[in-house]
Image (cartoon, rainbow, N blue to C red; front, side):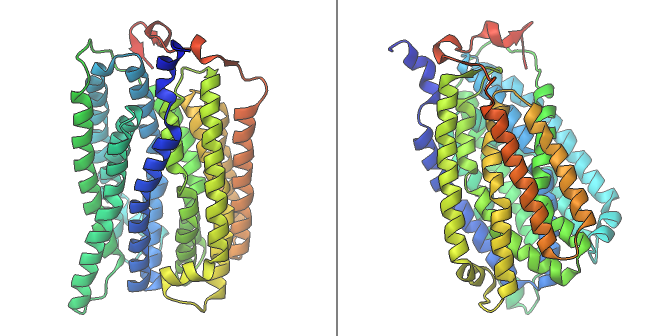
Length: 445
């Protein structure tokens, strides 16, 4: 028992670290809620619909960027467990150079495609698209820093960095709204996006400082050649599928419904989506504790089952409370009690999206274990989702039915992948990560 403890030390503290991130995340959640309340009440429904469509584009592009966080966290965790933390400096430097190139390309694409995207989303001017391009470009670095802190299990700094964006966005957004209103100027979607851009800058600054501290604490060692693209690209494909399932509803409704209806749906979707985001910290804590080169240990499965229990309880409790108190929640966000259609829509969105919380956790377990076949099938489900909504979109009920059906299918798929009986499970003492078993020709993958 005494020899096994050090090997499993990296798997300890799931509940403690989950509670830390859950507690810290509430600061960001409250700030996000206040920001949405502020914008719902200060913007017209048409303006809020435009804002929501731009934010959905940020989320659709930003969620696949979680592949970057996943790749960086996976490599960082492996290096730390192998006692080669000194190689982090070179590893992270390679990613930083690549991200700078990608950011420049995103800004260029946003500029060149501003008119086409504006026409597709029924926007009055291309300025929103251009600013959104800058937001997405800056947002590349947020999961990059989060991944390094997550892989190094620097959960305190990960918690702080993760909330900077939401808190700064609300503070700056409230300040801008106050300035415009005091001058008798109606706030617009551009007002909210400007606050988001400044929040991204603040998040990048704090994340860079925190990761620099993590690197300085590592002993100097021989640099390893960079090799991380395969894992990143596979994770990217997986998370593109998940991003569509999670965030495409608002953009699809904006395309197929009139602006007033799209604004109502955007309000309901924003409220309902908060349920799915609640268990994200649990998956983030679980990930570096179950990282492997493809073989599940008994310890990995114990950690996963605990995380699954926490996540299911959290989603069930939050979903029940929000369903019972939906009129009150709707009033908090919109200031209106008398809107039965909107209240009913919120309930529908909550339960249509709720399976994605468990999908996300199990998907992260598979990615941490370097198994991609089942998560990649989320791309197929995403395609089915988009095609079905494109064909059947006469009313919101059809959209919600398609959402719920596809999301339940994604959850079942991930359960089958994780719990299929052919999985090899070995004792953790026999599967400790060792450089000789995780390297090929001096490269880490």
